[in-house]
Image 1 (tube, rainbow, N blue to C red):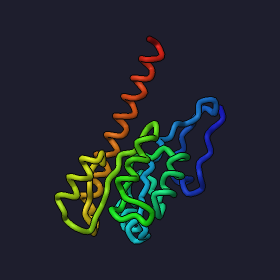
Image 2: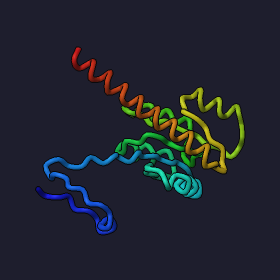
Image 3: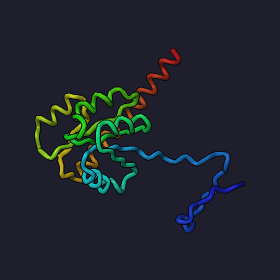
Length: 165
């Protein structure tokens, strides 16, 4: 029986014998998109999320984000309140058109309760304060990601039920 090859970095680890006819399923990495004119914000988020299984992407503006979303299945967007080419609410409008829309977290450097309420009322999932606090970022993204997976399963189940009806 053929065995799956292991990368050199894993040669000292235990080798698994896996039939070639049945490929090993690996957990897909959850994709997260950060949108900000400031690369420092993305670097801060990447540092906080470095030990997770999330794949963090960064784009500078709303236009690039919408192009990126056409090619990638993103679970969560972490977006700056200030975008170089529009507003966070315009981003939400664009995201709503996606078949499996990501949950959007909007962040600001001001602790403004009215802003947080506006984000939620406009359809944003949550809001964060900068500088980012590791526990709060991990909690907000984890909850948003779980909700996105749940919503995706519901849409799939609804679609499957509609096809059989």
